Length: 197
Image (cartoon, rainbow, N blue to C red; front, side):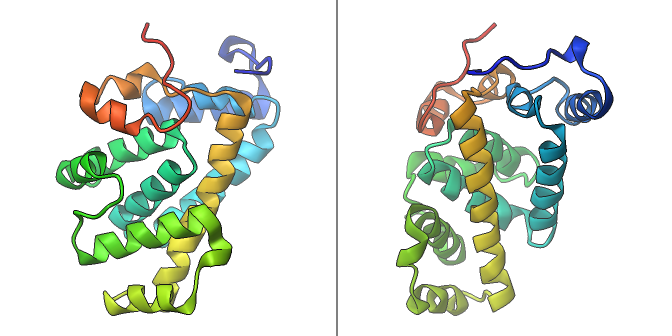
């Protein structure tokens, strides 16, 4: 981290609650939590925003859109974490590997590819999105509500990746070690993972 953060053993009040919740969720205290140690109130608002966006759409679609955004934002941390969610929570290692093997999303099926490519375009340059991009999503079955949800997922990821990379958070070894070396190399799109313990 580029800033001095509050160690877990010294945390109190809302920060201690935040650390505790993250440790309970992950089974360890992720490195990114240190980025919020000065502002646990912002961490709480982020958790609400992220949860609201995620729960408004099919989990698998959320992960595919988020991986596309994370790769475009060059966030190794988020690309890896959400690839692990696609693999473990959504039970879809096949799609995770397909994206790792071909990061453009070109080998995905029609709906997944349309979502992935749209999320990538929104993340790369939202001002370049045209009506035809939305038509392409409608053509594979997404409603306008679902199109907007993809944009919300990308926009939310922009906040989180900026915080993590701007303050120097690095992917935890606990997450990195769950991938093969080939997949991890594909997921390392920006700041490298933290050294293994």
